[in-house]
Amino acid sequence: MPIPWRSSADTFARILRQRGVEAVAVRDVEAAWDAFGEFLQIEIEGIEGPENDGDGFIVQWGRWGWNDDQPALSFGRQLAVTEVGERDDPYGQPEYWQVELQLIFGEDPAWADLDSLGHQDTGFDFDEVGSPRTVALGRIRRFIESYPQLAAIWQAEPIRSDLTLERAA
Image 1 (cartoon, rainbow, N blue to C red):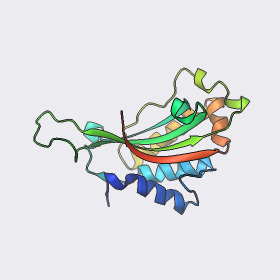
Image 2: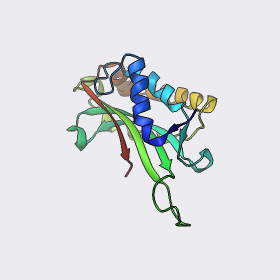
Image 3: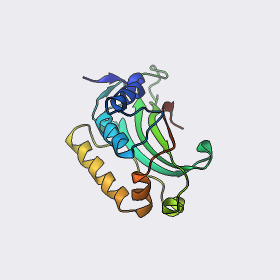
Image 4: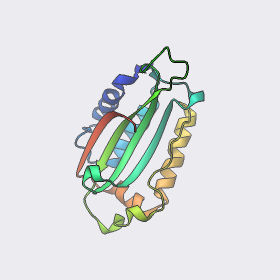
């Protein structure tokens, strides 16, 4: 049964808790990834259909000013929301919102050159909920494991985390 897009972050937080993980205190990247995979299989209402890339996901890594330039790994689900904005506008575009679990790590030589990989994300994937999305998650996991820096940070314990639902820029 689909959930409303506005409750997507709450749903992700509930899935994390069911796995013994608090969204603001993630200590196990693998458990967070498993919860993310489960969350990505839940259908969401109030968004564009798959033919219009209404529901996608991305994994990002790097150092950003908003987290004091500390090493970070992020799992995000982007939604093209149709329930907002001017409904009478024939050229109206959806608003893009993102549910993001950001994991922040301490410094470590194993990922000191995290920003030198040439890219900082997997790119958005818009495979549909179900087996296509399961296959895409496996592909992304293999991609991450192919980089020693990402594989190392994946095995580390985050020092803090945060789960948000925000309008994407």
